[in-house]
Length: 223
Image (tube, rainbow, N blue to C red; front, side, top):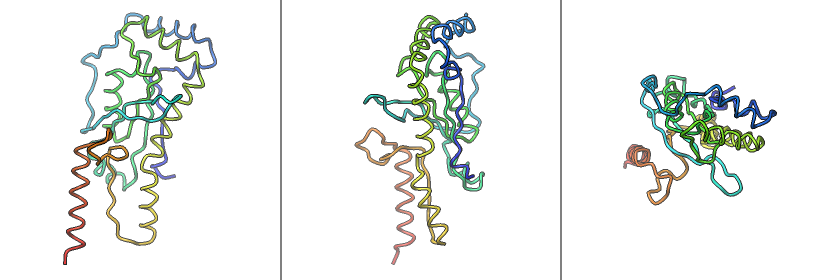
């Protein structure tokens, strides 16, 4: 199996494991376990081993409303891929703890990316983030009241990681199988990342893609 097809689901909070139980009692149990905890990061939080980049992405929709999460990946994807014999980076779906998709979860997601992965933290609370145990308990109870939506949400995250850039990789593989010369690069950016008028515009990736394109043209179209 190619590494490109591997996506791991990593649970920071057992929201999904309790889908068959009463949502209220499960939320109460979590409240007891987290008594005295706060959503504020401490000095124990660690930085990624290598430089990474993180951004907000849309990975699905629910009744016309976009599902947004936090995607992190190594800043120099090409170097990490080269160290792995050219394979695409494995993907990890990160499920936040009961506070929601807050800065702690984003930091943990970046740290995972620093290990050489593309990590996507999904949002099971629809943008809401708890600041107190009471609000966290309420959000968790509400989310667990609709287990099918939780499962669909995580599946959307997995599909996003699995499908992103698959078409380009298939084209690359076909070109390589045919023995055709090909310059192939991947960018930690979404569709239309080079369009400065769109919401997906990524200046650094767009500039790098432009430079590589003009260098290629200069090399192969010189008279």
